[in-house]
Length: 264
Image 1 (cartoon, rainbow, N blue to C red):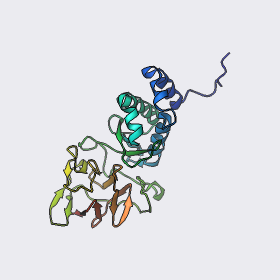
Image 2: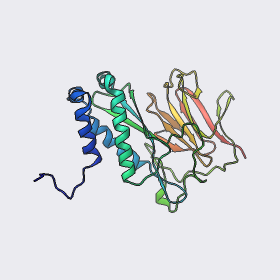
Image 3: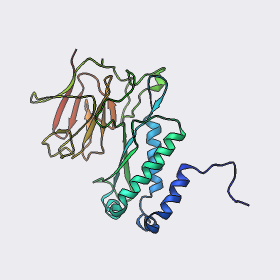
Image 4: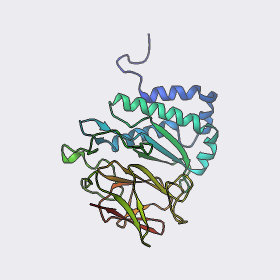
């Protein structure tokens, strides 16, 4: 007779732990002894999905499909040989969790594990975002449809509140303007700002991380998400994790200031 309660189905977390046991013959148990454990990361990813829910037109619930895990330098170095395998397991388990909640994502669930400079051993950071692969997300406009005020904000903001994101018509052009007058038009989809090769919008500023922040434009609004940058992202003088931008907002990354503009 089984000792497990029959009325309780096996949870996503339990299945995840079981798969980890057989992965690389228990190496994870040694790697994570006394430091961050994969189950803690998966728990945090589930919380991020819950926190970043947005109601789509038609009543569907959209949650992030891309999760960047920043580990402390020490944890990252210990994990390096197993990072790809762990990322795959985390993505599979998160996809199972999202499916059980009957939530919607764009494409596949993606997990990336990176080195988070400045994090103490045993600490980690999870950045969640809606990733469309640079293509137009196949949803009705406006993408974020709020039947009632509590549905906003769809993205959390650290250190302060804000109201419903201002809707920008799909026919309008949105752009960033730097202090020296340079203009950076934003395309539909996702744009990464940083000083590294992977950035779509590269800025030669030593105070900016290689992948510093991301802008997601769905035709209705632009959401700015900090990607766990070293020096943080400021909007109108306030540090943010993610925020829907309004015309005239001042974005500061490192020593660079960009003004968000909407034409039309």
